[in-house]
Length: 304
Image 1 (tube, rainbow, N blue to C red):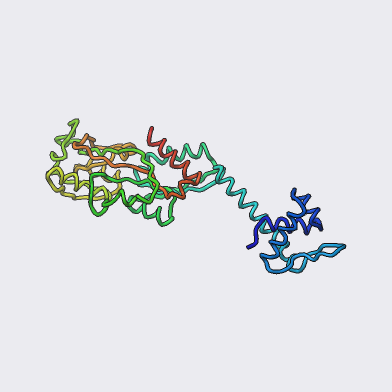
Image 2 (cartoon, helix red, strand yellow; image 1 turned 30 degrees about the vertical axis):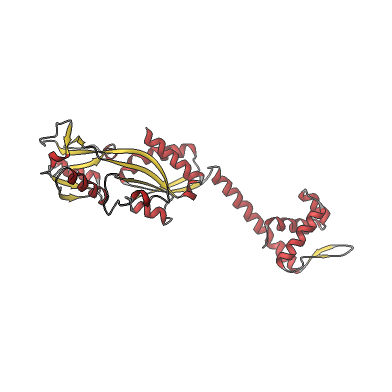
């Protein structure tokens, strides 16, 4: 195998015409240069230099290798400089995937802080709900996935969630409580707290598949099966449907931060239903400076 250090020695010998001159240029001893040339010739399986009492010149193979050495060494230098820039956060790329309410609340603040601290780091953003976002992370389609899970739900969409994330680096961000969303004219719209059981006869508006399973689970624990007339993972659409008096819904508090309810009221629901919001990445990616910085900024944004 040809090593870069041997190519540097060969190029120095070719440029100076002797082992001793090459040693002076490289800052090493003449025997060290001679030894490295022997190793290089053994690696390629053919002589690279012709030594006589009066001169030292390259063989045809030596000339070919010197010609390629210039491009190889300059490419390595460029690669080293680029890697150093990434390691020093002067450059880098992070592919982030997030669920919509995270994209509209946590992500903007985190990415603004990241850009201010490390303007050379570029971040791209794609929306996806878990478990699709987690699949994208494992498939190599993103570097960081913002995801959530409901600890109290154990169905096909969330079964084994803890084990499912066992091979990932999990950065906990916050615990997000769900609130009830009722039409303004609803009989319970003015209440401070509403029991889930009090909504047993209502028409329900459900969200994404994982949130829909959570809704069914919470209602069944309260003694009834919800009648789901509408399903959409678009939060403004949910609020619009509730505001029009077409049903009631559960929405995460995080989602309500970026949407202004119209003709709808939020109420605290008991018993409390919460979802754990986390940032996920692969163990190897967690050591990449730009990815680690992104995780740190997401954690700071969640703490505000």
